Length: 443
Image 1 (cartoon, one colour):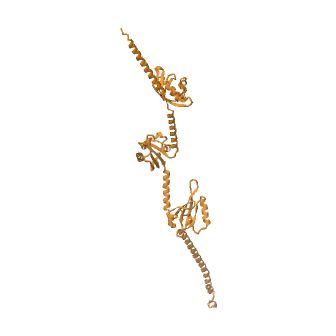
Image 2 (cartoon, rainbow, N blue to C red):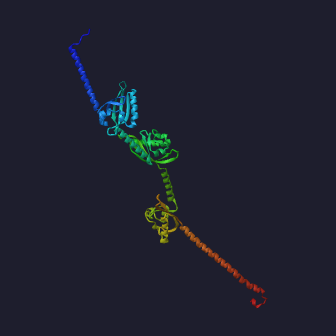
Image 3 (cartoon, rainbow, N blue to C red):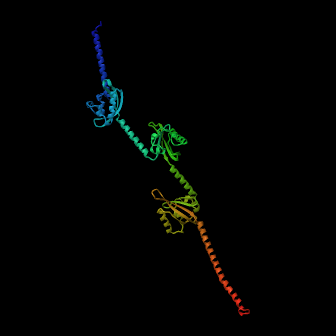
């Protein structure tokens, strides 16, 4: 038979129970304080779609009183575009899924929307859930601003005519703009991300050179500008490029890659080579070449001019064409010449110029206007072939021809005179033949 507890024992037991109750109350109070002090939204609800209990952060974040929020199904506060995924999350909770993560937009009392990140724990046997929500509106806005900024950056990069590319620390490509992708025969950055120079259109020697430039820039931290080098285009043709490379740095200043700009200068290179060939040809030409500005100030002369005129290049540059003017032509001659070339037409003819030592030389000259892209005359080019000796020879030949003509004329006259005189001489002899011997007329 069990012993009945004494009064003292019962009193002690009651006191222990009271202490436990007090401790439980204190714990509940502490939990309640934590519940309401949390900056996150904390609430419990049923799987029918209603919150049963919420903390004060619901009001501070969304603006509703507890009564206003609890009287409606929480789906009525969700943005229309997020309702479907919110219903799917609630359905998963009803099926017993323990941890659910969802982001959606809740309508605030003032009509605005805030992004809430939810972590949900379902308790199916009690037909309830516990949810913790965090306001991530600022983060979402920052992400949207970053996306807009990145989109703007890509738009700008794709709009500029200069090719731009970027690589990681190991010289694997991270992307490039439209101009660069087109140059290497690709359509989008996805086609090049993760690839090295060995996997693109250039040969191994070029790839080695490109990667060596990358290494030097990243190791030194010093940009490298105006790298002029040949390369092979996607269609296999050879071309020339001018490249600039700068180190890419993260927020802490660590070098994490390299950014490059690339410009196809093939046409410019060819034009430079053509200009070099032309300049060499002009320098070596036997004809005198003079280039002057629109006002007639001499800007260039070739060696043939120096040799013929006696002026050296340093003393003639900046002088006006008039320094070569001679008295052999009147003002009307020079005015007519200028009227033609100033209208953009070519003047050609012979002109007598005065040399440095005062001697005169005659030239077969062709003056051509040079125009800029707008059609404005910016220079005149005069090409002059020295015909002084030719003119002298022509004059000598003409004199010789005149003398020859006079000789022929004199010979003809003498021949005709001989013919007349021979007749006169012959007639007396014929008359004498008819006279008798002893005639007084024979004497």
